[in-house]
Length: 208
Ligand code: ADP
Ligand code: ADP
Ligand code: ZN
Image 1 (tube, protein in one colour):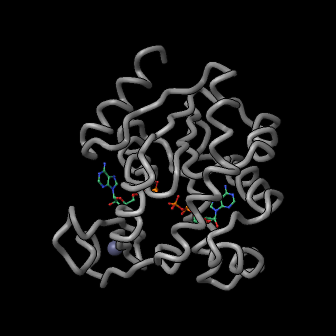
Image 2: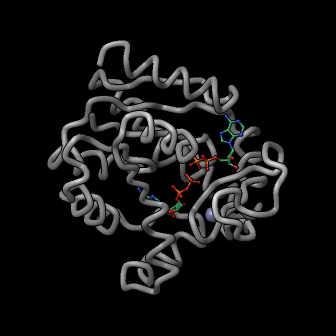
Image 3: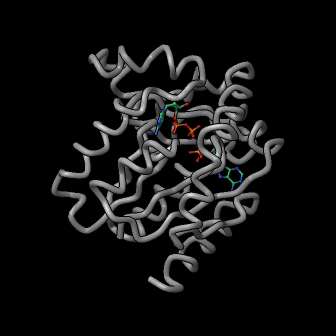
């Protein structure tokens, strides 16, 4: 199964993608993770992306399209994958249609006020990428690897509001795009992580 996880920043795409990938035995392909790694390593891709990511803007379509097209050719994607955070524009979705056929698009819906709270309380592990929230997890260190958790630069208040407006302008149109193709499954993302996970599995198993 090739599945897209769609939703505003902070909706819980990454949290749910990790769980659903484990459940289904397929890899998670997160363009945000790939871009942050490239920025950390100082690769050419990372250098091109940095100013956009830091400002809370989307990086250019060509750059992320090339990343995903290449990644989908790797052998671990043969039985499917979850695309987390890609596509984010109609141009990306149109490009994706040319090199992959999707089975479902899970749209995780959360109201803006809740998103601000989720993004500002998010803490991440800089070594393994684990994601936590100050209201959910009472820990200063990663439970998986012990590294001290940090706040992402783009989770600071100024950038958070930018990212939400970018979502409304550029990414939200994908709800209609995939709705028209009969692929959309909308989940109430304001529930607990366990309840969201159960709804996603139910939606994906409902009609394969
Ligand atoms: P996204 O990948 O969509 O940006 P994340 O999965 O990183 O979202 O989640 C954003 C923040 O909200 C994280 O701090 C995460 O721990 C927290 N979070 C995720 N799912 C929920 C939920 N269902 N309820 C409350 N907080 C959540
Ligand atoms: P979030 O978890 O908050 O939704 P991501 O980790 O997915 O954020 O993305 C972080 C940043 O990386 C975005 O704000 C954007 O700058 C860049 N990015 C990630 N995916 C894409 C994409 N598909 N198209 C353009 N930019 C992207
Ligand atoms: Zn860790």
